[in-house]
Length: 261
Image 1: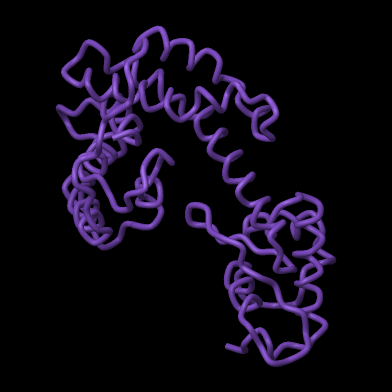
Image 2: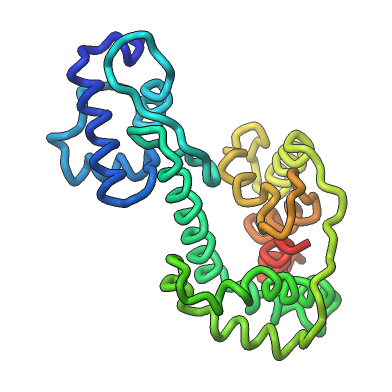
């Protein structure tokens, strides 16, 4: 397959122009998902390149000896790389703002305190209580800072913080995670659980990346450790592919709350 720098220069210029225009429009670096949506809305701007947008961006960001402009990878959030048409500290700053906004939106959607509430008073009380103290440690000061650009996305935070404060009082968050394991160990467990839980399924057929990206540590910025928490992976599997005797709702609450250890 032809490399991107072997296409006519005008096609690469068109790609760089698309990236520049979309970065300016969104005021942040862009990912392949952003580019797909942009080209869907403006097909006339899509370059005549046959590869997937993610591959096109990777190749366009490689240093080259020609004079055709290139793009620059700014950073990664989750399993998506983000790019800009210029190498600038401004785009790094904007990516961090975007990272914060995505995390706020994630918490608005997941609503960990309500998962923790399900665990309180049960055999998993300690996990729920720790999740509430962790949620407070991460978000209490942020929520009081109304100047934060991502503040407007924190629509449910008031209720969640009020419940957390009422439940745990002045207890300080101090839960340390169990020993984290390598990606290889987490992948082995995920495949084994999938094969056991899904009839006639092969563990080799599962898209591991799609699942492990949701479980890779650090999930919360309260931690710096990287790796995977095996008990969290196991509860994720119980929630996603429940067997007879499993309680998928409790397992879902457990793997959500375990982002705080």
